[in-house]
Each structure stands twice: as C-alpha cells, then as structure tokens.
Amino acid sequence: MFASAKLAVSAGLRQVHISADEQWKQEPVTVQNDPVDRTSTAARTRLGHRGQGEISTGPDAVSHPLSDPGAAGRVAPFAGAAIIVLVLVLLPPTSSDLSMLRAAALLTTIVIAAALLVPWVRLPAWCQATVPLSFFAVVALLRQSGGGAISGYSPLVMLPILWLAIYGSRTQFRLGIAATAVTFVVPQILVGPPLYPDTGWRGSVIWVTIGLLAGSATQELVTQSRHRTADLAALGAITRALSANSDPRPELCAAAELVTGAAFTVLFEPHLDGTLMATAGTDGVDLGLRFDPRTHSCATAQAWRTGTRIYLADAAVDPYSSKLAEHAKARALLCQPVTRHGRTTAVLVVGLNESHQHAPAPALYLVELLAAEIGTAIDRANLVALLAAQSRRDSLTGAANRRSWDEEMNRELARAYRSGAPLTVVIIDIDHFKAYNDTHGHAAGDVLLKDFVTAIRAELRTGDVIARWGGEEFALALHDCDLQEAQTIASRLLNVVPSGQCCAERSDCQHRTNPSPGPRHPSSPVRARRHGALHSQEWRP
Image 1: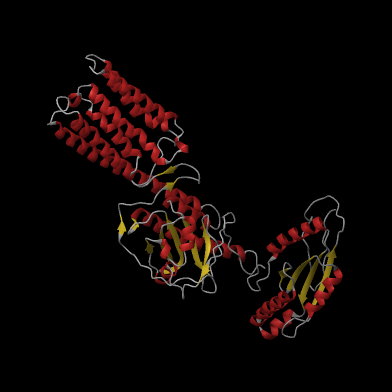
Image 2: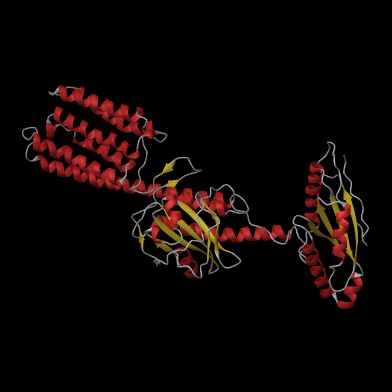
C-alpha cells in the first residue's frame, strides 16, 4: 500500500473516448529540424485564465477592437480626428457643394455611432472591418465637396489605413489599401477634369504607396509588440504552472495550449511496460491513450525514438493523432521530445490551429521552452513523489512506518466511529529475532524481515494496513473485522513466517455498533510493547 507513490493527473479534464487500440495506418512522417516559417505565428495567444481576453499574435489573426473592453478608447482618437476635419470644413471659406458636405457629416456620424453602439460581440469578427472601410466613402465625399483633387482632404485616407494596420488582419489591411486606390482612381475616371485633372493619377499613386508603406510598417511593429506580450504571458504561465502543485504536468500542458493558441496539447511518458501513455493533457484529451513506440510509426513514436522534433503540416496523415486532431479541429501537429541529460523522457504533442509549410518560429520557441521546463518538472515531480513515499514507509521492508501508521489509524478509527464496523489491531512479534541475527548475521535478518512482510501482505485484504512498529514488531489494522475473524487471520499468518521461525501475536478488537456523538479521532494512538503484549487503545465516546 505504501511501497510506491502514484503520481496524480488532472481530474478535471474532460474526456473523449478515442480508442487507443484501433488499427493504425502505417503512414510515413517527415522529420524537421531547422526550417521554420518566420513570417507566421500561432493563431492566438490567451492571457491569464481561459475565457479572459485574447490577444492576436499574427497579422492573419482577426482581432476584436470594437467588441473587446476599451473599444471607446480605441475609437476616440480616430473619431476626434474626423470631427476636427468636419469642424474645419465649416470655417470660411465654406464648401460650395453643401449636399456632399452634409452627406459626409451624416455618414461620419453613422460610422462613429455604429462603432460605439452596435453589439459587435454578436457578429462575426470580420464585420468590425466595415467601420474603417466605410470611412473611405467619407473621404471621397469630403474631397468632392471641397473641390476635388485640390481639396486637401486626401491625407484622411490614413485614418482607416492606420486602424486596419493596428487592429485588423493582413487581409483586412490589404482591403484597406485597395479601398484607398478606389477612393482616388474612381473619381479620376468617373468625374474627371476639372475637379480631378489628368495629372491627378500621380497623387493617387503616391497616396496608395504611402499608405502601403506606413501601414505595413505599423502592422509589423504591432505584431512584434504582441509577440513580446505573448512571450511575457508564456513565461508567466510557465511560472504559475511550476508553482501550482507537486505535479505540474497538467498545468504545463494547459500553459502550452495557452501560449501557443493550440487546439490541444498532450504529454506522453513511458510506462513500465515500455509503452508511451498520455499522462496529462488539455480539454478533449483521453488520458487512457497508449501505444508502443517500438512498433508504431506515428509522429509521436518517431519523435520518441529519434529525439528529434517532428512537424506535420497536415495532422490528418498522422495515424495516432488524426482522430484527436479532428475532434479538436487541429490542422497541424508538432511533436517535441522532452530530454533530460541527453535522454528522451517524454514527448509533448501540440495540435496547431493553422497549417504552414514549415513550423511557425514563435510556436517552436515557446514549445521548446515548455519542453525544457517539462523535463525539469517531471524530475521534480518524481523526486517529490519518491520523497513522499519514503517518508511514509519503512525503507527495509516497504511496510508503513510509524508516522504513516498514526495517520492510517486516525482514518480507520474515524471510519469505525461513523460506520459502527469493528476494527481490529494485531501486533506480531518475531520470536528470538536477536538470536537469529547473532547466528546468521544482520544481512540474513534483513532478508527475514522483508520476506516476512511479503508473506503477510499476501494473506491480507486490500485496504488492510501493515506497519513496522519497531525492530521485529509489526502492527496490522484490519478494518471491518471482528475478533473472531482476526484470530482466524492471525492463525494463518503464524504459518507463513519464513526461514522456519515462529512469532507471537496479540489482538484487540474495538466494536461500536451505536456510536454516540463525540470526537471523530482517538484521544491517543495505539501503543504496544515488546514480546507481543498489546495495550488497549482508548477513545472517548
């Protein structure tokens, strides 16, 4: 019972039943070392706990500037600039085309009101790009009302371009550049001179070029800033995972999903029989998954055998993770070996939401960082479990020690109080053990004690407790066992003493059929003295 410690895994993870024993296809996988895609990133990075705000870490990721908290603060600078322009238009000399001016003012009011009042959270994310794109129509109306190409309102196209560069995706920014071209080219074609002279195309090209360069530079700076924020979030998540509890595996898997924006993560570790078993994972991972890396050709098995990172741009080709990837809607797969002192100790499998020809560089960096921390965490968890087990058992025989015995007796006596079931304590003392040591040596005496505990355990039921009381004395706690049954068990135990030795036993049964209210724990621990005599235990009614 106390011979080994069982490492705990996260009990709150949702399970999906994916068979680990199905016949897998033998598909080849590709090993990748250095080639990475340095222009792509994981789809998203979540900060803090799940369900809180998300931050996009790549230009292709769609942000939510109008539905996330702080939307008014983001809209205010752009709305303020548009309002200042409208106020300037009213100053003399006023515009000759008041209808166009009124239309521009009305459309500006509608755009600002929509940005602040529309429930964007209920709409698809791409709908939020309609607000800055609509402002190009305002610019066109202002240019028309102010005299065409010489109106001086052309710089206003930078407002929606900057908005899309800061908050939009790469696709949305491209649409903004296209809208800029339309804003300048369409009046040039449809209206023409004198408001839009033939030489105006030069200005159109200049403004499109300026918008493209300024917007691209802004978007790159914003992306780099988000990457740094994501890195800080990754370090924070890793730190929290390592300090969470004695077994940080589930927390580190959750951190891997959080900082890479992955669809799922799962950690595979070797079992005693040589198979790899899922010991921790995020939502949607069945911790019963197991396979033999010596015979299977899946990406996880190859990463384990070779100690090399493997990236699959198409998760569906992997024979082991395809069903899990399909359930989690993962498109790509990254298998990162966890190594310690040059030896592979586990494999971290990450299902990515986006597929690229090569693994995204930020995802590789974060996964490698997490793999290194997982290796350290596994060693630490194993050491903590070993120390916990050693602190509760006798190092020679593997039986519970006195500390563990006291804890077990408190629990057993409390259970006896609640249920009214009998609890019997048996003290067994090996006769003439000192003489045996003197005759055969202490090494032989140690072997006798170990064989004695092994023989007794074979006769006990699951849940019964055996502890080394001291020297050659051992204590047994037999739950739901009255004195008559205990005497039968004790007689059987006397016949299994190894090496032709004999022992003496004494037992005492505490039976309370209708316990009255009182303390739930005994007032003092059970005590015994040498040569088999047992002192009765006490507790208050």
